[in-house]
Length: 95
Image 1 (cartoon, helix red, strand yellow):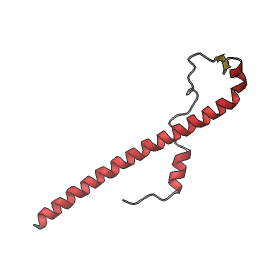
Image 2 (image 1 turned 30 degrees about the vertical axis):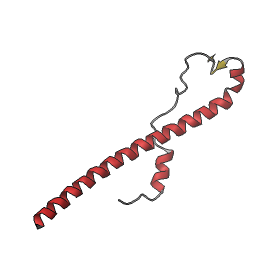
Image 3 (image 1 turned 120 degrees about the vertical axis):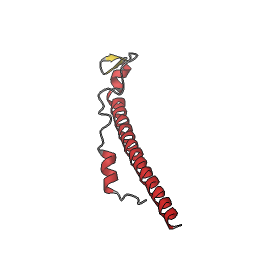
Image 4 (image 1 turned 180 degrees about the horizontal axis):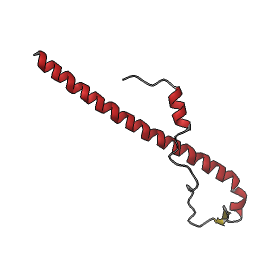
């Protein structure tokens, strides 16, 4: 009976370790997504204000407004700065 309990405890412990690893992976992916969304939002806000006059002339960043200009170009997507700093300064939940 004691051996069965130890085996069961070990199985649960292994499962918990795998779950924690998966949680860490998902937190990192979520952090990357949040940072990318922050950058896209900041970029689009600055484009809206900076390109307003040019858009009335039919130009955006020197290109025709109806061109296939990539609105995400020039972004440093994947950088982990703002959200990571916020998370590391806050207290992590214990599992």
